[in-house]
Amino acid sequence: GSSFDRSLSGWSDFGSASYRPVRRVAAAGGGACKLAALFRDALRVEIEPVKELAAVVDGLLVLASHASTAPAFHNVGSTGETCAVTDLFALTGNSSLNTHKGKILDLFTLGADGKQMPLPWPDTPFPFILVNMGSGVSILRVDSEAANDYVRVGGTACGGGTFLGLARALTSACTFEEALALAAEGDASHVDKLVSDIYGVEGSASLGLPGNLTASNFGKLSDNCRCSEPDLARALLQMVTQQSVLLATAFARHANCLDRVFFVGGFVDEPNHIARTAIAANFRSLGGCAYFLRHSDFLGALGSLKCAFEVMRGQ
Image 1 (cartoon, rainbow, N blue to C red):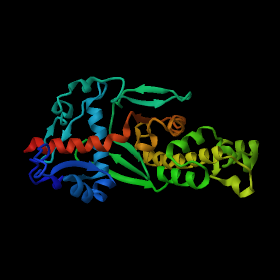
Image 2: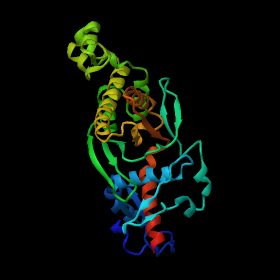
Image 3: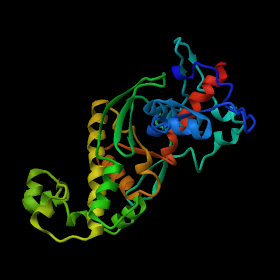
Image 4: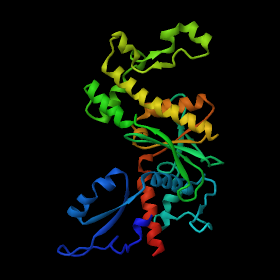
């Protein structure tokens, strides 16, 4: 980005304790802006903000370009010429990551049994929907690998921050991990009002709707129904997950890419297998596919690294 135009000779230089040049670090996310002054004053580190959504997209494309099963990805530069995607791993001197098949670069979905199922990258990669689930949720449509060829088509403020905030208000959980542990033991149907609760089993069938479809999140609480803390945590997790799934499904249908929807971000990282299983099941029932990446909450960091390397290579 334009913020990197000035000299970056201080990226890796270390001076004496009394006089040390400012080091620069490319970073994405709210902290890159909010904490920039603190890093500068306390550590003499200049934070160079990278646009968060662009960094997440770039991080995903970098992984795709280095997966052994990926199609041939190319990047269109600002002048219109086609060039190879920057080889980050070659620049770091660690080319072994390029062929790492089982840990960092793998792509997967979840089967009906909740187990991970490795997947190849889509044969036709574009367009695809990227759902970035963190404190809130942003939904992007990525149209090609050209720089900034994506658009934020929507999102919701009902995200991971909503889950943790309400879990702390409604249960004894204090941390995200404690809230997930409660949710694992709960039953959302004790809290949510289902279609079958309103129409009965036969009535639901006559409407062509599954009886276990959620009609109203937390709807049973209006009837003074008793429920446990785990039930509340599970209902919260389901509510947050359902919002993103419904939105992503609508945008994927509009873009004709229901089989190419990527869910990334800290909310769907490894510990939250409940949400990932529910997301995968929903898309599977629609004939589509929800993709997950291992360590997907680091895509922004990877995209920032790509930006930094591109600037260093151009000097």
